[in-house]
Image (cartoon, helix red, strand yellow):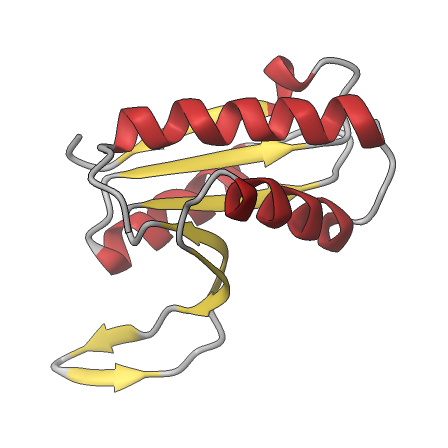
Length: 128
């Protein structure tokens, strides 16, 4: 694990997403982008966890309700990957919910199904 903060990690993640998008282009399945991005982040020396289960705590009871974060980077930044025509409010709400359930401060919502990747990346913050 590194000592990088969320903003430093975010810069590395965005550069890796740019590289993946440049090489693969839009139109693939989310799982393909998840594997490619995971590869790039591993190559950058970051600790990642894919398909990380995220329990819901209700009245001090841990409930396994099927929430899974696509990629968790350095236990600090959650990445939700999409390959959709357009991001909408429910996608942003999903990332914000994941942040609140885990007490993480930063999430990145990345839609690879765009002509320019900069139009597909949204930062979602929780008390950052």
